[in-house]
Length: 113
Image 1 (cartoon, rainbow, N blue to C red):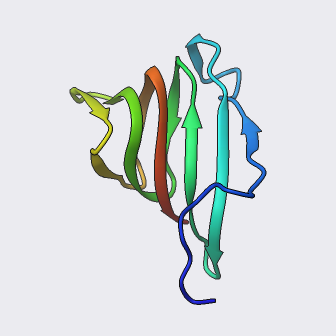
Image 2 (cartoon, rainbow, N blue to C red; image 1 turned 30 degrees about the vertical axis):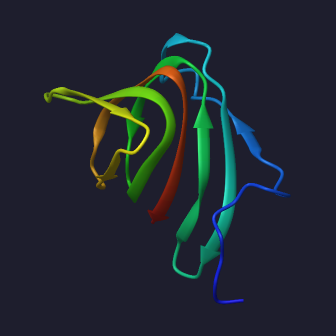
């Protein structure tokens, strides 16, 4: 099929959490539903995280669209940016900073390695 709906229905999520050396506060847990992937390292799906704060370092390019929740992303040396349902943004390779989930956050993503 060439048309793929981004839906978590019928997909078992991958469970995860930040690496212990990146955890800053809280006890965040992740669920990831990888809905589609293509050759060359292209992925699309849904990700969810519970409250907490951790360091992030991006080697990949990622488009994000927040479906629900509230998070604060802060780039090292930059300003804190609050994202909530309806917000869309791109994190480029080289982004380093923190992701803090204030209210459980769910996003759709497209990642290119």
